[in-house]
Structure formats: structure tokens, C-alpha cells
Image (cartoon, rainbow, N blue to C red; front, side):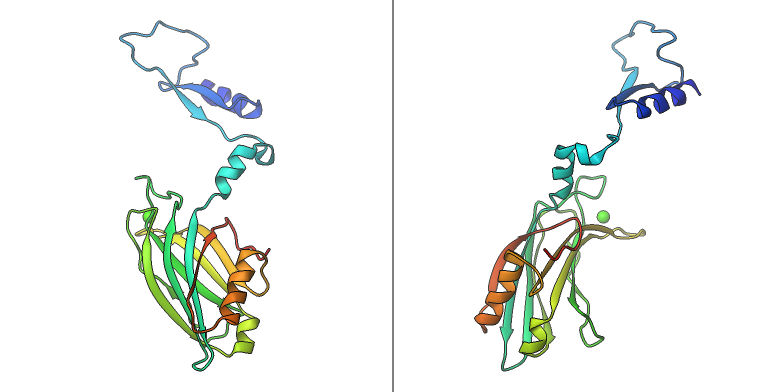
Amino acid sequence: VTWIRNLIQALSSRRRHHRIRLDGRDPAASRPPLLHGRKEYYEIPLQPKNFELDRSLKLEQEDRGKIMIGLCYAPAKSELTVRVIQCVNLIAMDANGYSDPFVKLNLKPGQDKFKKYKTEVKKRTLNPEYNEEFHYILSQQELQEKTLEITVWDKDFGTKNDFMGALVIGNRCSGERWSHWEVMMKQPYQRHDRWHSLCPELLLD
Ligand SMILES: [Ca+2]
């Protein structure tokens, strides 16, 4: 139990690393010389106590990669077409250093008539290309009140899928995520392709 006590001590201190001996003995009690260069200690990274203070870690966590979405509205058919084109620099969710990403679309506020769509799963990649189109039938007025929720997931076979990143596009959003929706409504019958950053959560502004 000595090494557990040491670990608890290290967790309560501000140290980022603690040495743990693999045979469970207290490394402080005796320090025999290293024989044949064998590694006796492994550095175990500990989580910093205060995530807010560690800015570099926070930035790293927020970088979820980018997604390219194509939007086109055809008023004569009352048809919105969403094209999921591709993603780049997604985060790795699997132990092999890759993910098996797929994209889900959800037009909100949702009624039953708006189906939830998803793309194919692209296996073992962080830069998937989809080029898949999905269609919604709704009037121009309805379109103004909608937001499109886009989420990226890692397919896990046998267990729950992992959330990877999110994007909301619509009139209630700000910046690029609003202007993309705006240009789609102002210039109908044309496909407008744009890159967007993925966020760790669904944000409107
Ligand atoms: Ca997976």
C-alpha cells in the first residue's frame, strides 16, 4: 500500500508526475542500482488540479478539427440540401491513433417530419471524405427559424459511440455559422461550401 500512499501524496501536491515502482515496493525506501539498464520506474502523468489554469491543455481540448458543409436551398421545391463533404484533423478516439468517424444531422426545433440523418462510417481515419447529400422539405419561412445541429461521432463496435465534436449553423448563430445560413437563403439554387471549426459542445454563439 506504500506506493498507493505515495500516489495520493503526489495527487494532492502540485507535481505533474510521480514515480511508481512496478513491483509495488516503496522507491524511497531502497534505491538499488539500475542493473543492465532495465527501466525500473515509469512516469505516470497526473491531471493538473485546476484545468482552467492550464491554458495549453484547454486549447488542446478545444481543437476538434474542421468540417466542410455544403448548403443549398431550392424555393420552388421547398428543398434544403445539406452536403457533408469532408472533415480534417479530427481527434483520435481509438487506441490505434485513429477514429471511425461518422456525421449526424439534426434540424431543430425538430418535428417528426425532419428525419435525423447520418453518414456512412469511415474506418480508421482522421480526415474522412463523405460527399453525401441529405434533403429536407420545408418552406423559406420555416427555414429562417431552424438551426442545423451537426455532430461527429466515433463508431465503436460493441460499445457506445464516442462524441468527437459539434457545430450549429442557423439564423440564431453568430459569425460564420450565421453567415453561411444567410448566404444560402439569399442566393438560392447554388451550393455554398464552407469550412467550420468543430467545438467540444453545441454552441449557438
Ligand atoms: Ca472507434
